Each structure stands twice: as structure tokens, then as C-alpha cells.
Image 1 (cartoon, rainbow, N blue to C red):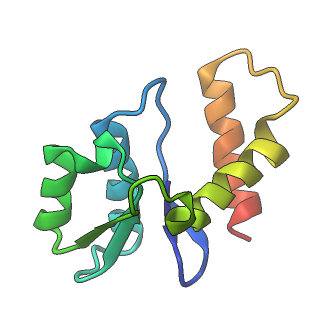
Image 2 (cartoon, rainbow, N blue to C red):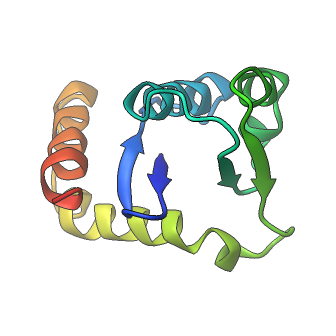
Length: 118
């Protein structure tokens, strides 16, 4: 997930069965498309391998974005994203029995785009 900290809006997201560099790149690409590829923006993440990957770092560099990472073991540095995922789980996912990944993707889309961003 990519969250604009000024508006606290979700501007990029992607879903996969695994946490991969491609997943992170897809979310960042969506954010870049939505924000018309701004330059010199700080993109803050945790220290996950997907964000340290060559592909993700190359994407940041290609679009003149400045990468920033949380301190090791400090979830508070990424509190906005952590808060979003908690709220998503409580308000959208817990208690639901999704019969397919596509149905879950639709629910996450509706929550992120229609509920959270309003």
C-alpha cells in the first residue's frame, strides 16, 4: 500500500499471495500514475526485502523519488501504514469468509477506494 501522508489517502495498492518486489512495485506504479509521476517525493517504507530489492530501488531512482526506511525493528516509523492495515482488517476482513481471492480483492478495492479514501 502507498499512502499519501498529506491527505492520508491510499494512492497505490496491490494484492498477491506472497510479499514480493513485484507486489511493492505494482503499488508504487499505481501511486505514480495517480499522482502524475511527481519528482523529489519521499517514499517511506519498512525494511522488508521487497523494498530493498533492486527492482524497487530502480523504480524509485527512475522516477527521482527519495527512498526512506524505518529504523530496524521500529514499527512506529511506519505508523500510518500499520494503522491502515489494522483498520482494513477490523472493518473489512475479520469475520468475512472470502470464497476466492478475486472476491477479497473486490472487497479491499471497495474499502480502500470508497470507504477509507472518503
